[in-house]
Picture 1: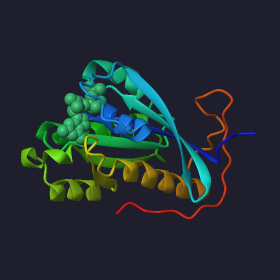
Picture 2: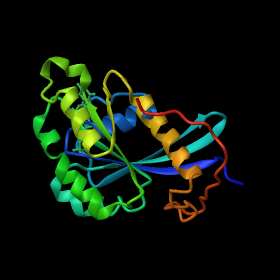
Picture 3: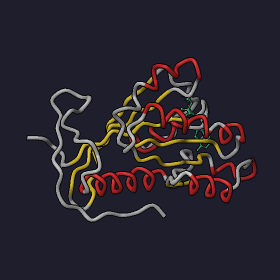
Length: 201
Ligand SMILES: Nc1nc2c(ncn2[C@@H]2O[C@H](COP(=O)(O)OP(=O)(O)OP(=O)(O)O)[C@@H](O)[C@H]2O)c(=O)[nH]1
C-alpha cells in the first residue's frame, strides 16, 4: 500500500542564479543555504505534505539554469505535472528571457502541464528591476499563475508549493492530468480521491 494519496512531479526552470535551488531548499528543508553554488544538471528532492487530510507527495526537480545543461534539463520537462518558471525581480535579463523559456516549455513539456511564474528575491526591494505590474500582465497574457517570493525571508514559498499542489489535485480530479501510474520512480503509483482546493491569488 502506498503512503500517499497523490504524487506529482514539479520541475523548476529559469535563468541561472534566480534562486531555484534556494526555493526548493527553503520549502523542503526550511533553510536558506549560505553560499549556494550553481546546480550541475538536475537535482531532486521529495516532500510529502498533507492537504485537507490527504497525503500529497511532491517530487521536486531543480534544474540548472546554465545554458550548457539545457539538453539534460529539457528531458525532465516531459513528465512534469507542473513547471515553476522562475525569474529574479532584481534582474531584468532573467525576466527578458521568459519568452525563450516558454518556447522550451511549448517544445518539451506536456500540453497539460501547469506553469507558475515566480518572481523571486522580493527581500531585495530596493534593487527591483521588474515591476509587479509588468510581471502580472505578462503572466496574464500567457495564462499562467504568478507569485512573488523570497527564498531568503521565506515569503510565499510554502504558499507557492501548497497552492500548486491544490491546483494539481483539482486538475487530477478532473482527469486532465496524465495518470502517474507510470511514475519516474520505480514502485510508486497514485490514487486519486476527493479534495477541496485552494487557489492562487
Ligand atoms: N536576497 C536573496 N538572495 C537569494 C534568494 N534566493 C536565492 N538567492 C541567492 O541567489 C544566488 C543564486 O541562488 P540559487 O538558488 O543557487 O539559484 P539557481 O536559480 O538555483 O541557480 P542555478 O543552479 O545556477 O540555475 C545565491 O547567492 C542565493 O543566495 C532570495 O530570495 N533573496
